[in-house]
Image (cartoon, rainbow, N blue to C red):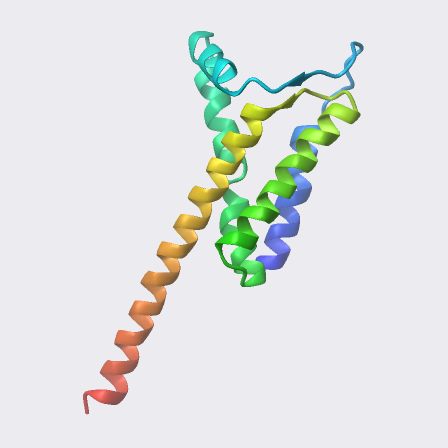
Amino acid sequence: MALELFCVYVVALFAATVFTRTAKKELPGMNLDLVGTIVERFIEGGGTTEILVNAVMLFPAGLLIPLATGWGPGRTILASLALTLGVETLEYVMARGYFELSDIVLNMLGAVVGYAVFAIGRLFVSGRTSRQYEQRHLVS
């Protein structure tokens, strides 16, 4: 079930970020300024929303990748990086958006938070399962 959810998420991610946008008439751009871009977005109206959207965009990846694959944090973060690099590269190559370093960093922040939620949930579930086992089998 987790693998199917992850596949649906990936299709929706690429559809929302690349394939539903129309191509720009000007040449694709690249913005490798991390700090300036984030500060600029805060100063502009609506910039905070864009920052939050970029941070939340890969949250599901950080949660679904380990559920679907059983991978630990290293592989999960690398797979999330591959996803965000894929999105940014396609936006650039297909002239559907800009390749922005700030988007990659914010996306990765979301993936890390997603993995943290997964890890905390796994600890909660495994701790609960252990207590249930002890109550049923050891306390007789």
